[in-house]
Length: 335
Image 1 (cartoon, rainbow, N blue to C red):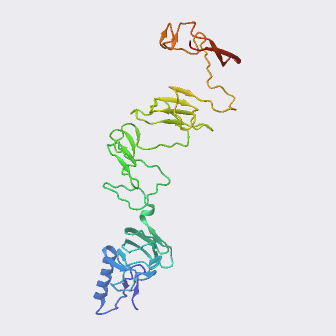
Image 2: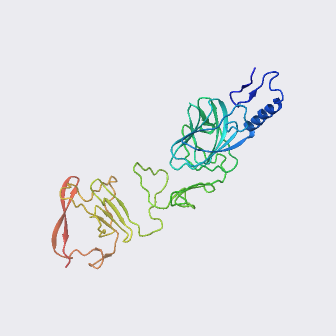
Image 3: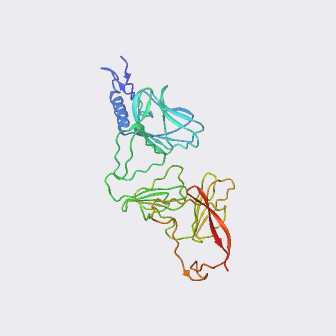
């Protein structure tokens, strides 16, 4: 009876009494193929967009019997490399020049697994599908540095950095900023565009919030360095609903766009159809005044408060509203 061959490594299975004089050579070939399957290495230059590892019954030169396969060459299109449709495992070193093309590895007639450029893969096949072990690996522990040159996708679980609570910083770079996000573990602070945050959250640059902002349990200070930095709040139709002019140390409410407040506080109700007063005062503490004036009291008009009752003639009145009723405050011309 003639020899047969195993399905996975193509080992020659000799029958009793066969191969007189060559039995030792065939056995040595089988042992060499077993050695290749355990520790063998082969470099294969990809020759076409549909290429195959060589497989030879009983031969020691077939490519697919090796444990480690290095793929080289330059792709000319989307390419598939295949092995025989039998159970096997491989370490694949993808050293091919891929350009914009894809490269897959599969059992003949089966489903391929994608290979990443300049990467090494631990793979196995059940004869119909090729699997990349690290595509769905379980827990992975790295005691050294883990470098990832491709995308990282966390899906279906939580991500915890520095579970041990050690003094280990984290840094995220942008396309031009080395410290786009910086986690200062030693001081328990976060910096955005700074590696030395001075408070729990330190942002160098602009901040935009399109949702609600809740300040609860602390103070809010704008322009703590006392620089010439203005602050503006827009209304639905009022561009300068509230405006602080830092350079002049003034506050404006409803002032025209680009204008400077005329006093320490200027309120401008500029709408001719606004139907609202400039200022409404509601004093619930009935034994306290609505307004308190502190100034320089003089007996003449040299100060901003005077006890002189003859400073000039009655010139006109200013309209006010007292509990819903129109009233008038007289004003006098200076003598």
